[in-house]
Length: 290
Image (tube, rainbow, N blue to C red; front, top):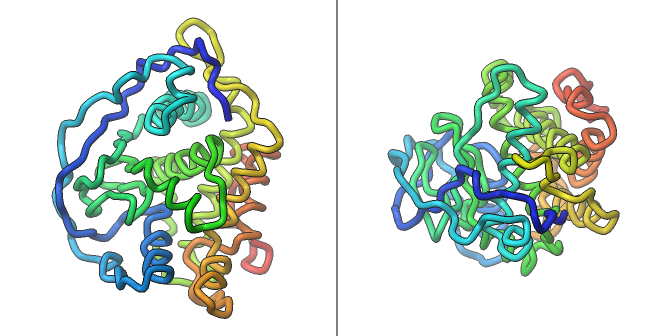
């Protein structure tokens, strides 16, 4: 997805932060656990201890504005600026659809930083930390996707990941996380339904992203091309539980699913893209129809 070169994006509130060291704690929601397992599978390095449910470290504070990020042209040329700029569009999208919406903090991670949910880095992947109401993304994560996980991780794929994490923020604000707490793994688990709903929310945003405008009325983003949509679908498929298990040489085991299959993730992304936010009630769908 391409930003309009003259769109004004300097008003974003994203912070760049890094250098703090912490142990990964519980409560994070998003792609993080998947990435830890992938790294363990593909490198032979045992990182599964990072997925423990310990208390984690106190969140880091402060941070700097993302440098040289004032226009859409800047966002098109730099991953960190692209994420920061997209936060303006995603926040505007949700403010128009959810009464009482409040913006999460977006932290662009340099190497690693702390949160109430533990360490944020490219090893833990992008995640949303509910106690902090903060989305953490290390842009080098996309290089990992490109290099190891059979996806190009182009601009729209990157923004799909960001919109997915913002979807978790919406679930936190609306009480979905409290109403449907983690009840373990499995194809019909609350965890899978939560992740698929976030995929659907991301798809709904993609469909309307080019309608959001800056202070001058200039759309932030151009409508996505078909190739960009395919790239986003590829990213969704790459982090499907069955694809991860297959890449590790394992037989697909739905009882161990935490995020949904590749087919489910791409399907719910498209459900949102075609039907909008109202099409995203994954919790009322029978397990066999997910």
